[in-house]
Length: 501
Ligand SMILES: Nc1ncnc2c1ncn2[C@@H]1O[C@H](COP(=O)(O)OP(=O)(O)OP(=O)(O)O)[C@@H](O)[C@H]1O
Ligand SMILES: [Mg+2]
Image 1: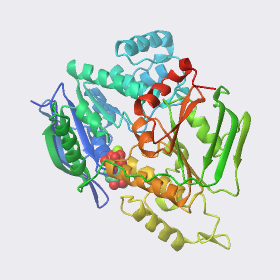
Image 2 (image 1 turned 90 degrees about the vertical axis):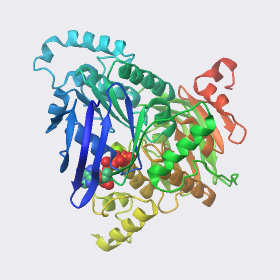
Image 3 (image 1 turned 90 degrees about the horizontal axis):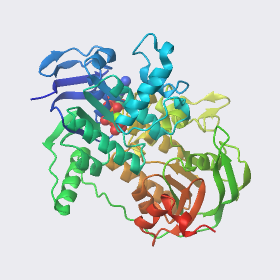
Image 4 (image 1 turned 120 degrees about the horizontal axis):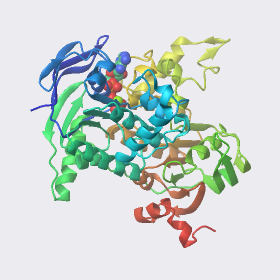
């Protein structure tokens, strides 16, 4: 029995085959994982299932009946709900307006009743959110809940989630997992994409691995009570994805700290609404070290990063750069701040340097130099696509992130502010980026490494600052700090203990 069945689905973009003869059975009431490295074709396949793209060949069956998913509205009508990798909400509308958008012609008339309806729905699924708030003012994690509520409101039977946990905090992930299990137990069919293998093994019933557009592995997920078995299984999945051995472990030499590159004193920064979100932050950052900033999402990390890179004015305190310093900034939201989506890869790669030689001479852009630069950057960062003139909007999520990294790490910056630099990257690419950042450190760069992923902070940092409600509750030595200790402080535990001076 299958709820949804794909048979021989093929999708091409020009001469490039993004999905190559894909057949998958999705049984009802089960959670199905699709794994694959960046650019493997996962999002493309989901776009076909949700009616956004038409396949060039193949057939889709819904409850064993052939269907033509010729538009997203057809898919929605048939009970297929897609939660996109990059949210498609309207920032200026409220939660309720976003959720009911396009479902009824007279929604303005009974908005209050709709608010109540949405509030009830959000409570029923444990997806807490205030229906009257403008979506643009919500943290990313909450915006995602709105996306989920939106498809539940449309009574979806099949839920498709494209990397839903990439932007969530640990408690949010746990709550999402509970919700998805509940939905599956209620008979919903769920398709789940993630680069986090532990999560997939913990949550999903079946797994399909794609590589370069083709199905290379399909199985019921076998977890066992033996941790060894699970580690091997995870390793096996990772290898199937990238087609080579991956270590999943990073070797790191001790830091050799040099001169002070940056000092920050009594920093106060406000968010867009004028609320102070960074308070009383002081630290020094030295050449050759990685200062990890641990913290649950929304504790001031975003504003701190913006202030460091002078994108946000500060309210109080001092940020001092010692010497002429070149700064590389990997922002959290690559689509809003990191990239111009309608520009090509080559253009995006020179956004910060296009007035300079060799890209510009006598006020003329130098096509050949720009192209060669792009070619070598694409090779270095393994940006997978057909050419340097491809628009960034046509790249897979992970490959977009690699474009940002390639630009910001070019030209040996002395200070690197990296916020969630591996978000959306597959295991192989994550390993490569972390290696690269360690190499930058060893070259002498000072790195501020901001991540909500505790394990990533633990692996990468030489020192770990824990941020809670805008403050650094403590700065720990990366070599001796334990996961429990950092986790405890992240949850505000340091407050009661009086760790803060
Ligand atoms: N609209 C498009 N035009 C041209 N090429 C496209 C388009 N959409 C996707 N592609 C290409 O198809 C391939 C598969 O992309 P897709 O987004 O499906 O990958 P993915 O598996 O979701 O990767 P990621 O893990 O990075 O999100 C990529 O090489 C991408 O560049
Ligand atoms: Mg994708």
